[in-house]
Length: 402
Length: 86
Image (tube, rainbow over all chains, first blue to last red; front, side, top):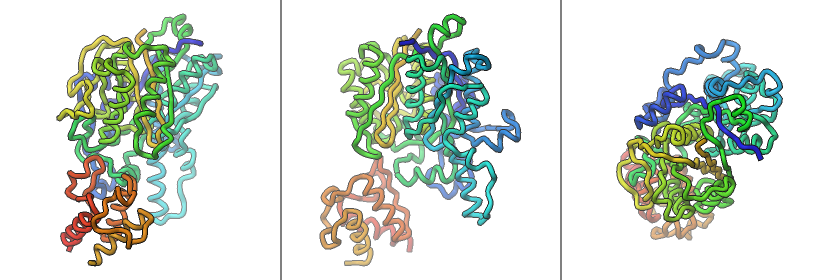
């Protein structure tokens, strides 16, 4: 088995258009959730989101690219450029055959669906742009990354709703660990902050109209976000020989299925994924200093997640820290685990735990150290990142300081 | 039985896969076997049937002022919203 390390990270999300800016926002506990600026906002009952503002695709892509790139692809490419740039890897030679890209997205090109449904249904037109299909398909972002960086190995896209990114990164991890690939570009993205994308979520009645307050007694639901985060996972010896900066080591991954309900979370399924990741990494629970929670801010998730953590860690659950950065960047659905992995890297590399902001009242059912409102300096060696999706599909990653 | 009551009972009965005659005013949704998804779907059907907007958040059902504890309380809440509309 090979060791797997992260040698590059990139992102764009509601907090910043890059990793340093996102880290700064995490340290400051800044909220990126604002009033939405989208078409037909007045017809929505949910009017807030973690939207990427000041987004100017023309600053990054030419006209021919923009007609082929849905916003989720644009976000992914921007994040991938930052990650690959930081890694210093060049895939033009033989390495390109030993490297691929696995990404997560729940819904792919939602803006493209939305705009073109308007064209045919609202405007009554009978013709759409010729590139609608290659633009909206879920694997478009992965394919464009493969083309931009010459990645010719195993490449695909994973869709497991809110766990998509963690499932994707888990695959990339196992591919490098097994020797199937030398390096993998991995992460996830989502861009469904458009009328149809939000209207669909409104229907479930789990969204907050004012803020995402994970673990707080007065939490009243989730807030959607958008953006992407992408990483370079690389075989340790390969990274070491070329003197690459190592951000963290990926040491374990586990996935489970609740097999119980299409929307309600399940404590046993979550707990099995957490303990499975520890087992895969050959870790003792007491080594874990921080957990980036799934922490959606819904009544059901947060209490179930805290109960699962308490079950797995026993007394140590009261000593570790657990926070939900969704309070700052919103819930990026299929891209969320990727953006949240940044908080894990920050904890390991910089010794700063990102806070759970918007925290107002303790909930006895979420009685863990949720790092309320203010970031905290702490030396942690091992962290976990939880993702528990609709459909009962759970995926947990374990990372260690190098 | 008012027309609102009749329609609400029809919607709830359909969701519970029961005969409307088996849905009594004192039944709770749990009694009728309606879970959280069934509740959200019932509220949607009520909104469509009466052209009203029900202020219901599944994270905090009690905060919305729309009392879902029994069939009777739901009928009263719907009657209130219908009256507000008129």
